[in-house]
Length: 604
Image 1 (spheres, rainbow, N blue to C red):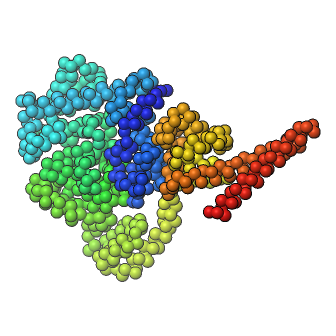
Image 2 (spheres, one colour; image 1 turned 90 degrees about the vertical axis):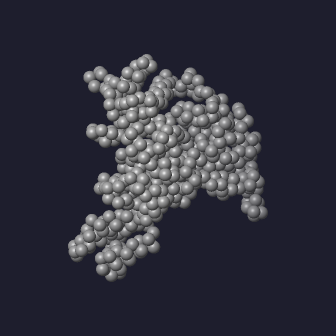
Image 3 (tube, rainbow, N blue to C red; image 1 turned 180 degrees about the vertical axis):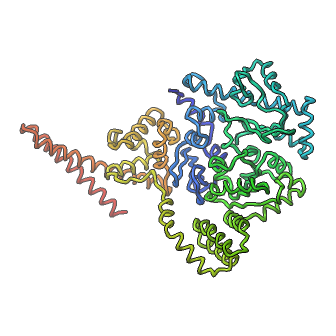
């Protein structure tokens, strides 16, 4: 198991601000002391994701995700803790020694770094082939023919792979790079223990992740050959279902404009950017995945999907509709003339012509209804019936009554059926699904205390007051010790708080989270540390003291019950007398506390 010294973690934490780290993924707005935005971990329309710069933690009231900046990076980037430390260490400029990791972790880190370095070398090789090698002339001629400027070629790092089985293989050999490593990077293929160039006779498109790191390549054949487009095989760095082409360049513009334009191919993205449409991105030859959607979640208010005017492009649109439906942003589908892709269209009509196409896009539901209407034609009675039957399923899923009513009116006019008839048929067909919609809409809270005892609730309330107001921590341990807490999770948190602050004299909840490796514990602590309503120190102190008094009453009640049991079991007069004395003392202290609590309640 890896051990990363607390000093290393602290150094990274001190150099990075959680608001800045999370702002690279989520559009945050200042709300009082904190920042809020749409949660990147679940679909929502109203922001429930909160970041506290004071405590250096985040928490979502919707899905209960929470923690510090390390927890956030682990979740958003799907990394282990050691990987997250290295990731953030690089951002912070903190060197992390290899001895802090297990031999297996070191192997993985080293392999990733070597593959990353190799991909950068390969990019340079392909670029030089395009610009300097005579064999690259046909690649440059192709790009020039597609009206890609030299500046754009360089911006996207485009290159060329000669139609050779051992071009890159030989070049890597001259650098003493073992072919097996290049095979693991997806640069070489292997057959019967022999290695060969994976990309041959193709324009090369480097593929970056959102951070601007090359993870793989795409290649487009320029002579006859299949497939027309070829992506790197899956590696430990590259997974096409987790990458959106052009996102690393588009992100600053997406954040500013709150909009993304989804197209289908490399050349579409490249030529749209060249013409000033800087928010264009594309999935890599696959339908939109949940991971793709998560890359955009919380960053956009509008998504325009523009796909080729052929059947394949239309199918790609429909596959992505379901995933985008509940993301809380406006989604429009724009269609191009038959046989034209976005690259062709913008070359012929310019940026203004392309924006005009976007402005005529249909909303998701409208687009789906349009496609169904186009399929049936509505000339015959049975066609109109089929249209309504399919449209009814779409309308039944709508949660906004006004939106549903508008589409009902439109369909009623299209098929010549009274609105009341369609409305009644829709209500009848969707009656059975309403209950399931309600149950599916349930949000389960990590903070739910179902079945918790009064003591457990009071313990949680007490520690919440301290976590939300760390200044109270010293006062708490002047009055009690961690053993005072009895419920498992609260005892763990209390022990962590006590040891952490006693050893380090620090009041950072973010740093405290480093004491706990369990993600569920991170969620619980951040939930407790995130107040629903901000309170003043004085109010928080009253809250803490009230909880302490109630816990003492509960504690002394338990002690009195134990003493009563002891009295029944003791035989000696002296022992019974001593127990009775303790019993009377506890009862007197308990009554005194009761009076003070009641007095405060009357005064409040």
